[in-house]
Length: 275
Image (tube, rainbow, N blue to C red; front, side, top):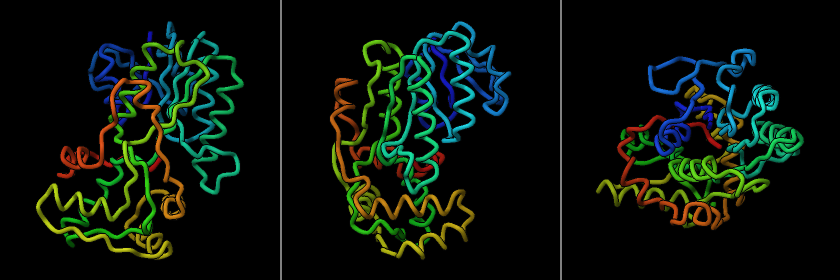
């Protein structure tokens, strides 16, 4: 039995679609088959969802206390393997708070005695959808990434990798897989491809980290300071790496930026959090 958490989110919903009938943990039921109601903040509500589960696909916000409680409950229920979506820079000394949270969760999982597999994706292409309103209003978008190159990955491909691992976890025990798209791209490349796909000019306007942080705060973006930190790190090369792990897991190449924009540039998807 497979249990998927975060099943209504960007990665989780696509993973569930690919897996077919599985058990899903939800806070608010929608009537879909396999749903079990539970709340990360109330570990005692997770028992029904975890009962009889062999493999836990753990997807959710980087809140260490929450996920550690889930892991402890999973261990108590005899879960054998945990597949977890983490961060590619999940280090205890990271300057970004949510990456430190990821590090705490990963360390707890590794020490739990349960078998595990970690998926560590680069920057999600879906984050670019947050730029759509500004592009529509001004013909471009602002950013503090400069000319930093990034191995962006489509979240649908993260889901595809997660689905493979969840169905054959023993083959991947103890592994950490780094997930990227097929190419390193800059935000200037994003603007060019956006323009090419839509047939309308799109300008990338470079701004400072301080200006970007102020704009995020002004617009009420959650975790504005943390997001600004991530963009600053991306400008410094934090995302300038590629990996073949996705192809090794799935047997196919990941989607590129143009394919993503062709599918989603209309802004039809909700925007997930930054990794």
